[in-house]
Amino acid sequence: GAYVLPAAAWCERMGAVSLEEVFEARADLAHDLSLGPAELRRLELHAPRLHAVPQPDGKASPPAASSGPRPPRSYGPPDDPERYSILEKIGWGATASVFRCGCNGRTLAVKMIDP
Image 1 (cartoon, rainbow, N blue to C red):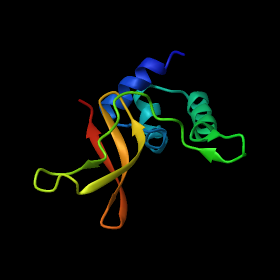
Image 2: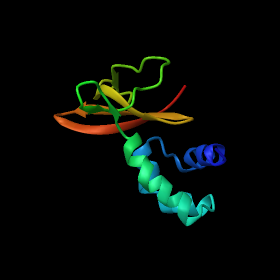
Image 3: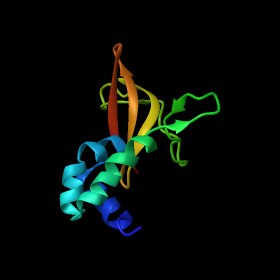
């Protein structure tokens, strides 16, 4: 309902691209949207369930990424454009996407501004 558009605008302003980021900043979200104690409690109760989508085998998997242009397979600065191997899209927002990447044996996240 009533909080969908204000919450989406808040996420865009704050750069929150995943449910985890919103949940971590829930006190700020509640303050900025003037949520009452009942609305904040509802968020705290329901958000963890939205994190993963149950599969037929009983295991949970992350929500499916939105459709759209496929991400590049690698990413990096002009002098090393293949520095990061893009493994999967793990989050997205109105203006950017976040990818799980590999680099020199490490796993990290890279946020890319959408074209």
